[in-house]
Image (cartoon, rainbow, N blue to C red):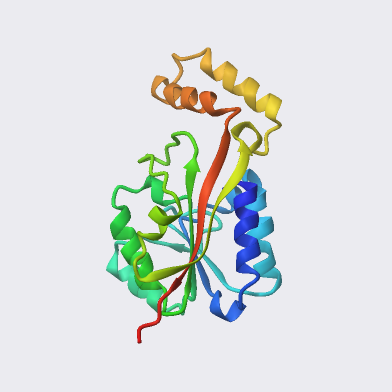
Length: 222
């Protein structure tokens, strides 16, 4: 998640009535180390304010790790039933959809979790290189394409958020990041398949990156 992306989400989330947002389900949350150390702006901007106000955020992922509150698969009916008992008001789905081969199905499931009048925060890279986790389908939607995945929702706000250059997007100083990338590229015999991923990244080092961000509200049935 870019710093600017986290800031965009934070500004939106904490401008809304907390009773309509929390408990929030953070889907594909990764672990505590990722949120607090590898990309510390995620916790600082998004989740620390919620903890300080004692708002409930439930971090869920398929990987059992420190900082994952709920481990499970959205395609598992038993897991979905457990979620249905948690009074979820909103869902955060950040940088997940580009890694799915069953994107439409997962979007339907996410839609079913949110009550009428509830909110969905979705972000997907718009301009960004190929990145495995463990795959990347290269899904790079604009605002309308992203919103169309959720036909039961209306757009409240949508924006393509600029993230600066790729080399500036990590906690590593840009010069060291570029040097590490250069060293990796001159050793192609080490993990050759991953070397091609590094090459793709290297070609983007000084290019601007961006992400499609939308806030959607589930339409109330008349």
